[in-house]
Length: 357
Ligand code: SF4
Image (cartoon, rainbow, N blue to C red; front, side):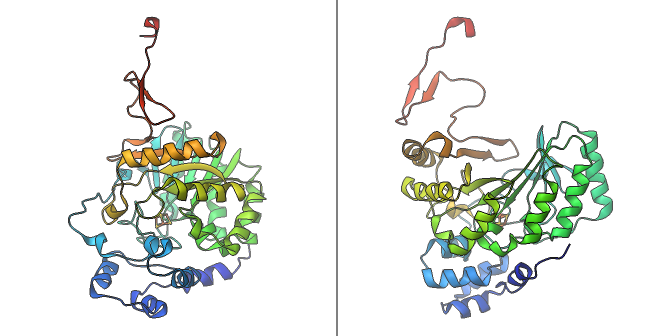
């Protein structure tokens, strides 16, 4: 398969050196920021850096992607593996936490380093999975036919070349219990050149081999969109893929009903189906983005009043320690306390009939 050079060029010319980046921005690089970037390096494509330069140091884009001193603040205590992924590594690059689906992490490389990332302490370690390991991964899936969906994650799975993606998709299509494929990616917004003809042709080629192929696009704020990435997203929504949204609720970025409303209106205009709104994970180096669950619930309640149910994302939280994802609006687990949250955000008591108890 012939690959477009353009996205690989955009990727390889990205800013990886903090000095070069700040020279380009023409902003002051303090020793403290330099120190942060040694622990959590920058990675910013040139087009994104140009947008950051235009929008300024206080902009949403600057806060999402440039280092700040709080990342090393010892008072902000967070976890290296906030959602407990390591507990569920069942085969090489395979995390099997939920019965019917498994996360496949073939790369830890991304098109940008998001400063809030829940995997920020694991990024850029490797982008290769060796043949022998992959044989083991496939053997695990054949022995676990309850897994019907493979979720490509990372890092960002679209960092893989089209040839590598084809190799993995071919192997998964030969496991009869795998019905659905999903990608979670920031590329369509951050490095939209990645949505090249080869990628679209590949998805077309595999559409009859799987029940669904889904791409969840990661975006947090309407300022991330421009005419170039909107065009790439239109190619995706015109394809046979199912296109969903994925957003992280972040203090100082999108922690208001109004900002989220603008974002979800953008998703709706682009025909992206709202899927997940994640409460932020308690990640080491990203705790300055954290906000209390109570506040997140108030924001979500506001959103719920303003957009129809079909345009409303699931507001979810990953419980630290590997306990998995649950609704962030649910004050409990499977036991019912006798109270539900009303449309006004109040707890209301519900008396259930005796015969259910
Ligand atoms: S693209 Fe995703 S995995 Fe990569 S740094 Fe951003 S949030 Fe993390």
